[in-house]
Length: 305
Image (tube, rainbow, N blue to C red; front, side, top):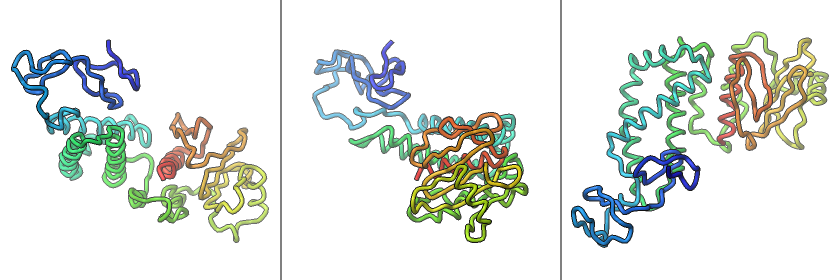
């Protein structure tokens, strides 16, 4: 079986592009654009219909050319795979069917179907350009899926969500690092006003000096002039020996019986939900289930800047 030269994924019969990574497949035979028959690569005319291969052909000959309806179906199915994964990661896998039922009954369904047609046209046009970049198109679709699924889950599914997510999160869909108030974004994502048992600080002038020093000795080791945004105390007696902090550059934390950790936003490679905790670049992080998910979402956003 033929394999993609870029990702080594098995190729489908007659594939012109790898369906896994989008890399153009080196042709072994010449496919006639008129009748679809196979010809030797050196052929000047199609052996079945006589089509002249030497004449200037459509630009689509260079790209995957699927009908718009097929693209709509492909995009629709890809979005729902993304949505199901996101529901399982951020809310509850056992509620997936209820989320889909809610989709069927909501206004979101109508607007989404229109959006799929627009996306299909965008992808089709992109495929017809001389400098078509499959990876760029894929990333654009992933960004759109992320925004649409956020809007559906947060705006339409609030009564169903086991984990509360503030609608303020939706304000940051097009946010960038330069123009964003990072402290405000951290507060909006984490919704710490929903956590009665969590002690946190954003005003470090009013923060008890002994606790700030304890955090500085235990896990918070910012670089010179690195602005601290928020410190959260997770120690049993309020000593700040354990906890986490967000700065303008990184997240710092220390869990009970764990060493101090730091991961800069630009160096985040994986943020993953486990059972009742999350891992950041493979390192254990845990507060409570709801806040874990909000930290996960915040770090994914900071990583994208």
